[in-house]
Amino acid sequence: MPDNLSAPRGTADIYPPESARWNELETRIRALAERYGYGEIRTPLFEATELFVRGVGEQTDIVTKEMYTFTDRGGRSMTLRPEWTAPVVRAALEHHLFASGPLRLYYIGPIFRYERPQKGRYRQSHQFGVECFGFAGPEADVEVISLAWDLVRSYGIADASLNLNSLGDAVCRPRYRQALLDHFQPHLEAMSAESRARAQRNPLRLLDSKDPDDAPYIASAPVPESFLCAPCREHLDAVVQYLELAKIPFFVNPRIVRGLDYYERTVFEITSSVLGAQSSVCGGGRYDGLVASLGGPAVPAVGFALGLERFLMILQARDAQRETPRSGVQVVALGAQARTILVPIVAELRRRLREPTFVDYGDRKLLAHLKLADRNRARYALIAGSEELARGELVLRDLQERRDRAMPLGEPRVVAERLEAEL
Picture 1 (tube, rainbow, N blue to C red):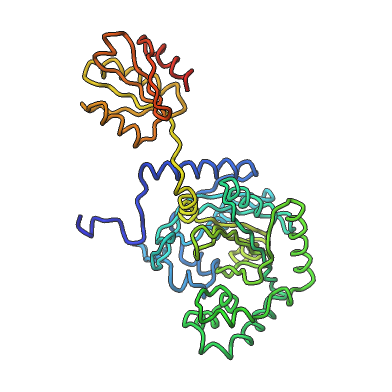
Picture 2 (cartoon, one colour; picture 1 turned 60 degrees about the vertical axis):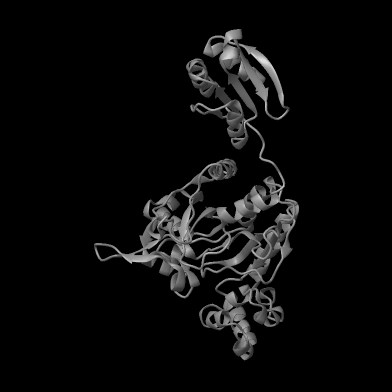
C-alpha cells in the first residue's frame, strides 16, 4: 500500500478482535466510575491554544515540544487536546458546573502529542481519567487513588505498586525548588541535555529523568518532605493514614513528580513491572490552583489519568499464556437449503442470547466453518447439512469439550429456547 494511504505515524487502527478488548475495558471503567458517583464528560478534540498554555504551563514539555497546533480559517490558534484536565475545567467554568457544589467527572477518549512513537506511546493515544472538584481534604485524594487502585486490582495485576509523594504548595514548594537547583547546578554539565533544559524550566522534572548519566545526582538530591510546611505535612500524613485504614498498600516515594505545572501537594503513580522499564500504569494528584488560574473561583481538585494503550499492553503481556475464553455460538449452514432453515434461527438467537451469534454465509466445507468458529472463539457450533435436515435435527457441537449431540429441528423460537437453556 502507498505510504500516503497508511495510518499516520504514531497512530493505530483498532479492529476485531482487539476492539473487543477495548470495549470490555471501557465497559468496566464506566461501571466502576459510576459506582463511585462520577458522571462522564466529553469535550471537543481541539481547544484554543491559550487554554493549554495557561493551564498546563508555558514551559512544560507538552506546550514547548509536543502539541499539535494549527491556525484555523478565522486566524485563531487551535490545539488538538494533549491532555484532559484543562478542557474539563474549561467546560465546567463555561457551563457553570461549579455553582452547584462539588463535582465528580470522568472521561474516556483520545489525546494528541507529537513525540517519538514507541511501545505503548503514540501520537494519538487514549486516556481514562477522573476529576474530583470541591474537596480540599485528604479524603478526596484517597477516593481518587482508591478508584484507580480498584481498577488495576480488578484485573489481577499482582505486582501493582502505589507510589505516593507530596510536592508541597505555593508556600513551601519554592524552597524545595531552590534546594534542587542548588543541588543540581554544579553537576549539570555532566548530566543529560534534557536535564539541563529541564533545570531552566522546572527543576522538579529533573527527578523524573531516566537517563543513566543523571542517576547518581538524582539519588543524592534533597527530598520534598524536608521542606513541607505544616499544612502540607498534615495533609500528607492524613492521606497516609486513610490509605492504611482502607488497606491499600503504598510506598512514600520522594522521587515521584508530575510533568504538568498545575500539580501540588499529593502526587501518585501506580506502577507494574510487566512491561519492564515502561512501568507507569497511571498517575495523578492534586491541583488546587488550576481552576482559579483559568479565571474561575478557588476550587480544590484532585484527579488521575490512565493510558488505555499502556494498560491493555500490560493485560496482554500478563495473559500471553492464557487462551481467550470461548463464548457464543457459530451457526454452520452446509448448503443453500440449510441456510434457508438457519437464517431465521440466527435472527431469533441474536434476539435472545447475551453471547454472540456468529454465522458465515459462504459455501464452505465443515472443517472450514469450524476453523472460523475457532477464530471467533465460539463455545458451540450449531450445524445443519442435508443429512441432518433429512433426519429433522440439528447438531450442537461443544467446541471446548469436543462433544456432539442432536437437537430436534423445529420453529426458530423453539430452537432458540432450547439453545438458550444450554448456554
